[in-house]
Figure 1 (cartoon, rainbow, N blue to C red):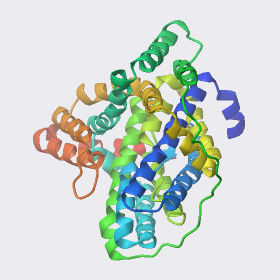
Figure 2 (figure 1 turned 90 degrees about the vertical axis):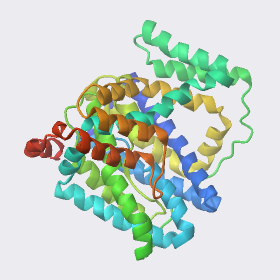
Figure 3 (figure 1 turned 135 degrees about the vertical axis):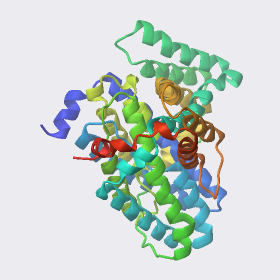
Figure 4 (figure 1 turned 180 degrees about the horizontal axis):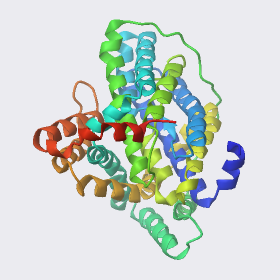
Length: 405
């Protein structure tokens, strides 16, 4: 059967609500790009085009991946990569930064096509990957409860609505109830949406150039992030939610291809989106065999919203900050619990603990974020003090597990 017919057949309230929440979360992530761009001295016009390209290109790839593999694989871009991209542009120029992006994408494509992700996944065992994932996602949990400090009433109402609906309204997705309650509160409390402005823009083509400086300072770190952090995090989340396998090589290859395309449209990367993968693959998205629909919904939201992101951005800015924080935290609540369980209930205890702590710390070394170093240092420490936990004899099975069809 065709993907559109399967999509309509498998669509239900659970995966629709999860996809909607993940899509809103992805739209709000554009604020990070704009903040990073403005902090680096980039023009608001460029940063807006940057985000529009992020939504359009990753939305298109985000339709293909989950529809083809029938897995919850939403596509977005690397946030650590975005911070590197914004900081390197004033140093080497936009065209050179995009040239380095093109090379980083080519490296990811080669790694995926060659089937080398099996090696990466054996060197970075699942408890260490999930330690990094738990550390990164933990902030979404803490951000969910922080509004209890200065926005207690809406926070309590939304959180209680989520749990009461989960307990007593089995046929209504709790996230939908929490969102409706939050929207109702905003309406009754008189939220100010007068600053919302309508605008339409599309991605713009630009030709990259190539310099060694840009590749060493930005392109090589970006390739390491895409291969060594983004794919393992996404694959770890999918497996952690009960899916037997995830196409690590294909995810890396498609991400590399998407990153190469992105280089011609003012965008720095395409990869699996870890936080949105957590939302789309979690229990709130319904039965396992239908959770892929949530990821497709994310792609649809991205594509539709991309030209109007100026309007969407002003709308998100007008919303109280607690709204998205609470909804994202509730959506990821059980995912965080599962990641914590997988981190601390198996082998590689020391490496997994260090991976978790480094990810939580948010440290940066050589301009590269905590997610990458959590994997590298966590695996290194585990090899040093608990080498027996590594099973390099299962090379063939591990390779087969992540190999794509």
